[in-house]
Image (cartoon, rainbow over the protein chains, first blue to last red):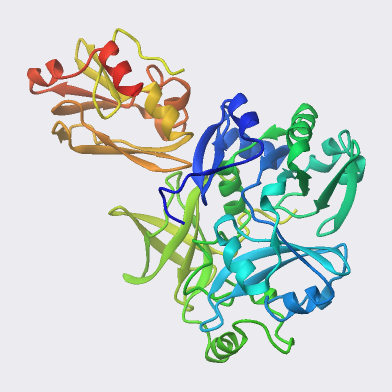
Length: 354
Length: 127
C-alpha cells in the first residue's frame, strides 16, 4: 500500500464529518482519530460506560463451502476444532518460512460451512492469497460497541444483538435488516462488534449514538488496547515477530497436523525465544514511544513497540520486546530522546481483568 | 474553528507570544493544540536557561504524537507554568490562558519584530 494511494472512505464517513471528527489516514482508510470530545474523554467513557467505534476499515473475507473448515484449519494457527458454528476465535496467519505473524485475525464461524475472516485493514490481500474466499469489506460497515454498559445500552436498539455473549457469533435482524453480531472487541471491555449492510450503516450508527453510546475514534481505540495489553499488528506483531515472542503461544494449535509456519515455530519453541514481549509501567506522565531503547543495569536489553499515557492509571505504559532474562518485577530504564525514564516490568494487561 | 487573539504575536512554529512588563509569555496556539489532540505531558525548559530563537526548548506530548517546542525569541527563561506538571490538559482547554508554557526575557529585541500578527498567522493556518 503506497502512501499516495487514495484513501478509502467508510460508509459512515459523512456521520463522522457531521460529528466534527478529526480524520486521519490509517491502513489505507480515512478514519476518525477523535471526535471533539477528545481521546481521553472517549477512553474514559469506554472504561466507565460505553462507546461506539467505526471499525469498517477491518477487512472481511467470506470463506464458504464444504472445504472451508479444512482450508482455515490447515492454514491458520489456532485450532478451530476447539470451537464450533456460532463462535469466534482469535488466530494468526504466519509466514511459513520463519513463523512471523503476517496478520492477526478474528474468525467468525457463521454456520457449518461459512466463515467471516476479519484481517487488519492493510493485510486483507495476504489473507485472501493464503486461504481464498471473497472479500466482502465494501458491502458492510462494522461497528464496535464496547464498555461495561455496552450491552445494556445496545439492548434499547437491538435486544438480540445485545444478548450475544463473549466470543459468540449470531445473525440477527435489526429493523428487518440482517446483521452479524460477534461478542468480540479490542478494548478489554464487554461488548459486541456488528457487521451491518452499507445501506443501513448510518441508521444503525445513529440509533446507537442516540441510545447514549459516545462515538470514539482510533486514538482511544489505541490507548484502550494498550491498557488491555492487546497487540497491534505492525508494532507487537509483524515481520520477524512470532506468536511465541509475543507471548501468544495459546493462539497456536500445536496438536494440529499442519498450519503455515508450524515447522519454524516448533523449532523456535524447542530452542527458546531470543526475546519476549513485556509490559512496562513507567514513572510519571511522560510516555515512552515506539523505538525507545530499554536499558537494564547499563546494558541495552530491548526496545519499546508501543507506548502512551494511560488515562486510567495516569502514568505511562509501554509494551516492549526485551531479552528473556528481563522478567516481571524487574526495574529498567527507557531512553526517551536522551532522558532516562525509570520503569517496572509488569505482565499485561495493565488493568486488572474485569 | 480555532481562535487567534488579536492581542498576541505568533511564530511560524505555532507558538504565541504575549508582550508582558517582564518580557514575554509563550504558549502554543489553539490551532496547534487542536492538531496535537489531548496533551498528556509537557517537557518544560529550566528556569534560568538561555534559549536561542528557533532551537528546541521543550516538548508537548499528546496521545497521538510528540512535538518539539521551538523558542520564538532568544533570551533567558524566567518562569515556567507549574500547573502543567499535573494538568497538561490546560494546553488544550485554555491555550492562551491557563495553558501558557513559559516566560522568556528576550535578549534580542529584533526577534519580536519578526513575529507575525494575528491576521498573518490566521492566513498561515488556513492554507
